[in-house]
Length: 622
Image 1 (cartoon, helix red, strand yellow):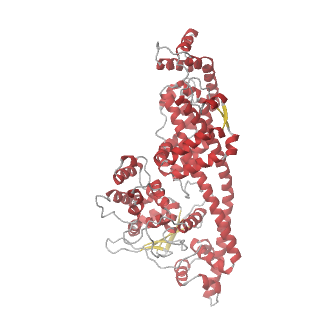
Image 2 (cartoon, one colour):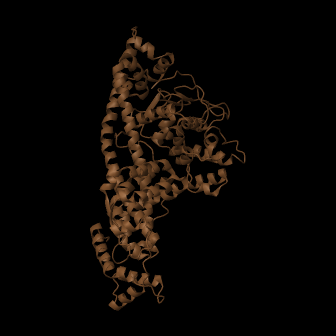
Image 3 (spheres, one colour):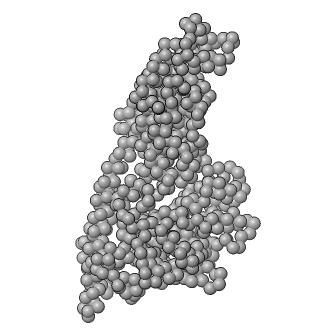
């Protein structure tokens, strides 16, 4: 039976008490060539594990241990003071941030390179089981998923979070932590202990940020519900105006806001809906907001102001959560250090760091939970297992229609399963992902949001496949380690191949016509075509919304005879608004877009020619 945390802490207290009486003094006594440092540490370990030791043996250790080396000048005052504030550790947090700004260093920092093995427990047998503590904190799950976190966590997210930490002088000053005695520690060990202390303080402040973000989530839940209710009311007004027009009435507001294409869309896709279903249809709501702007400008202005504010708060919440997820992955290096110390039997440093270790376990638990969640679902908003999944408990998120039959589907995976049942629709969808003659679906996502396109590539490739691509494409083995398309497209490096990566990956179709130079790109495109079913709800929504130069007000993706529509949920509303914002802020288009339809339609191909995306709808303002 494993010990409880309280029992563990009592055991540690007893252990550190033994250390205080004998071990530290033993290891700080003048050195002797009679025994090696390993022998001394092994004997010290016997003391820790409770192995009987005669007083004369202890005296011998005191006389033989290594002399204390001087500490670096920037660390000495901290160890002299012992109890320090987080503000006094800012220089260490800034150094971590500096390393994190380099892409490869950030990925190395964020990576968990494997679970602490049985060596940890073996080195501490007889008193406490560190592995049990780690398992209790769900850190083992994070170990298994950490490579995915490292691949998905943006360098910018980690940098922004560290910047927020160093700027939070109030919370940093309020946090204190007690450093162990420096006796027995060399300069490298002392620096590592201070780094551990800074990470613990950073974790505590991050916990406060997490608590504030979670409280704001409760407000967001109500605000999204209010927005959806306002959209439904607007759609009800539009339904009444259309019904009146069909009876021979006239509406100047209706004529000013819905053109001929809009009315054809309403008749074709929405004409058979009841007023209740019409009000809940996202496309109808989008059209209704344009109508509301003309018919009731004050009501529209109120909605627009509230929607902008809610989206802004949602983005702030997401930034906090992505930063915490990246920082949680970084924190795992603390655990790795613990494992390394124990396995290497650096027992002085190990035992002296135990108070910090328990501080870490208490502070890092909530952060590691976010890290594990991020590794499972990706650092993005999505309906399944995401940061916003608790806004609403919906059982249906999409409408899939084939001909006159339609069904409400729980998730993107269910939609893709329906596509697969119609073999032609599935082939059309895969063919439209990448195009050479016109923008493909992923290119249109990338035109407004390269990072999101990168996430979608990461979601359909494994770590090994990404590293293989990078090694071949860049012809540089240093580029392959922990390579992610998300990071590469979000902040491309200075080389020509890095700058052209987005265009080569997204703006052309090399699946059936690869040259030696484009073979790595071709393989990735083939992988995406084979594994697109791994995309999340949010990613399918982005395909629907982001594939045109203006917001997708018809909120429909046509794939041959099939139609895919998101239901009006908080996730869908956030995806819609952020896609619109991303396109408005377009700074780095990978190809100049042509005029395209508000409804994205994948046409049936002739022979093996990739399917075309039809165009021709008027531009919509937000």
